[in-house]
Amino acid sequence: MTKFHERYKAKGFQVLAVDGDDSESREKVADYAQKHKLTHPIVLQGEKVAELYETDGVMPTAFWIDQRGRVVRREVGFSPEMDREIERTIQDLLKEKDRT
Image 1 (cartoon, helix red, strand yellow):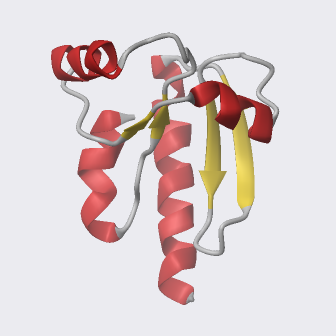
Image 2 (cartoon, helix red, strand yellow; image 1 turned 90 degrees about the horizontal axis):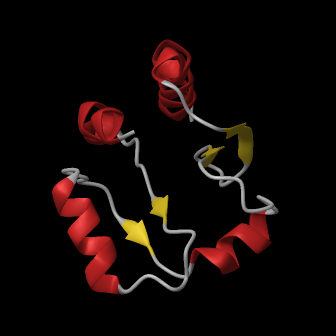
């Protein structure tokens, strides 16, 4: 998701990661982000977010939220084979943004 964040952030696309393990320290999450060169924001206290969005603890779970704040898509899991579909979703959301 970081590569999509970098590729499309100038057009208004944003990735917001949520750390699902509330027991991890801010430092541990920061070390992980640095090690994996994550450039997007990471929210701590993910258990609250998981409860709010009813993820059942399955990670990763992605929520696609449009310009109006509506969840328009939900995906559970991730594999590199999903890259094309993810990119198409991003482009569709950005087209919608341009129409509003």
